[in-house]
Amino acid sequence: MVSRYWHTLRYLRPVQFYGRLWFRLYRPKSNRRPAPLPRPTTGQWCAPAARSVSMQGPETFRFLNETHQAAGPDAWNDPARDKLWLYNLHYFDDLNAADAATRRDWHLALLQRWVAENPPGIGNGWEPYPTALRIVNWIKWSLAGHGLPSSCHQSLAVQARWLSRRLEYHLLGNHLFANAKALVFAGAFGVGPEADDWLALGSRLLRRELGEQVLPDGGHFERSPMYHAILLEDVLDLINLAGAYPGTADPEALGRYRACAASMTHWLQVLCHPDGEIAFFNDAAFGIAPNLAELVDYGRRLGQAALAPRRQRGNVMRTFRVTSTAAAPPSPVWLLASGYVRLATGPAVALLDVAPIGPDYLPGHAHADTLSFELSLFGQRVIVNGGTSRYGSSPERLAERGTAAHSTVQIDNADSSEVWGGFRVARRARPFDVTLERAQARFCRLPGQLPLEEAVQVLAAHDGYCRLPGRPVHRRTWRMTASRCYVIDTVEGDFRSAITRFHLHPAIEVTIDGEGMQGCLRLSGGQAARWQVSGGEPRIVADHWHSQFGLSLPSRCLEVVLSGNRCRLDLDWSETG
Image 1 (cartoon, rainbow, N blue to C red):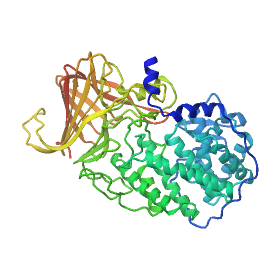
Image 2: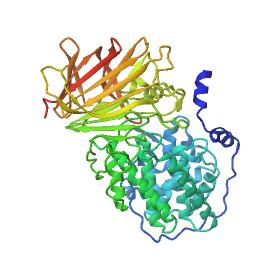
Image 3: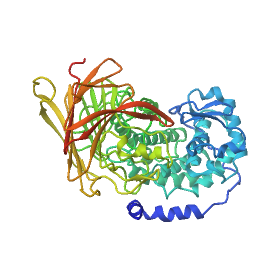
Image 4: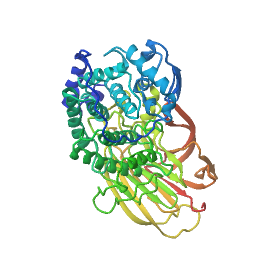
């Protein structure tokens, strides 16, 4: 236990220690003086990316695939509800969801109800993150042409004052970014010295945080495609706000926002499957952030450039045209700064995780998924990672973050990175010896003599298991052509047991043939891929895929128990299509 705490705390920044103490001890007084006058809108506000409808009735809400009534003052902090569900209740995302105008009367009543039933500084709604998201949603709703009730306009100022004194320096990352964005929105929405102070503070924070949080290849430094998409929407919102209120963002800041939006869009397209949705690396699920097509369309409405910038050395990454249909980028694409590789050839797209789990001081959304991968064939997901269905400190949350929930190798029943406590990581895996090369491949383990084919090969290793007694090292090789691929796992050092898992999408049917060393994966579109294993004992086990929060879909997993220190999986889809 002492070791786990030490290896968790040793990476934190000083501000995370004294910031947490300050956050616990200091409670600012609410300031209810009159709000700054509203700033005239002299520019154009574009329709933002629309969220999913969550308000089912005047007092009925659906968040995280759970529908509940929220009636009366106690509903905002109901202990019977999950905290994340309550957070969503306070976000007010439905103000800017699809067909929001048809629910305007519900929204007006809910806005005034929130002010009446949530006194300043009390309850979930006044925690900094929901406060920040609510400020932005209220202002976006107002910019869409809905007049805020006077009580809500006054409340916005109270919320902005409160937030400016409750910034989440102890959490940093996407939380502090959301805080800063909300202050910029509040500052642009009002006029006068107080609004100017909010705008200046938020702008200073955004400049610093964008420089740190957006990596040179355009990826968000927490390395969650879901949070990356959330922050891309944030950046697009800032561009939109600057267009609605000309002069509130200086030309340098606006240029920085546009450059970040372009590189972040490029990164997101690389980390999406042919179905246009994100890969599940670290905390990731559908339905939380807008998808790629929605974000690209939003960018186009804002006049974003059609081409992603060239941000990579050499010729591994190439500029490609961004489309709203997630057209495949050229292959291979190696995102060096963030640590992901995209291989696309023939009908296959593989997304490989050769990345660190995230910034050392901020691994809260990290999973023990090093050297995992996902594979789509013929536009359909085949091999997946387990996804994310919940937050908190439950056993389910721990299992979803663990190595066994990902398509990689687990050694001696340990996790490759020591995930614990919902959002904590102690000792963590670090990839090394990562190479990408072109090669000639003959997949001779499958039936028949096959000719040499042009292949792309990626090799990588990680040290996450070196803390175990035998100091084992996991090495993995992916090699892929237009019709076949193989994955080789090697474990160096001493170990008791090793299992490599290939989690399958719920739509995939898997069978074992013959002596149990080969079989077939059948896709919902009618295609098939033959699989064959050597160096281990395969078995098919029951599994679950967590595609959304609050949702668990039954699926299957192909497990291979290593019989030595090396095993290989061959996949062949040459006879289909």
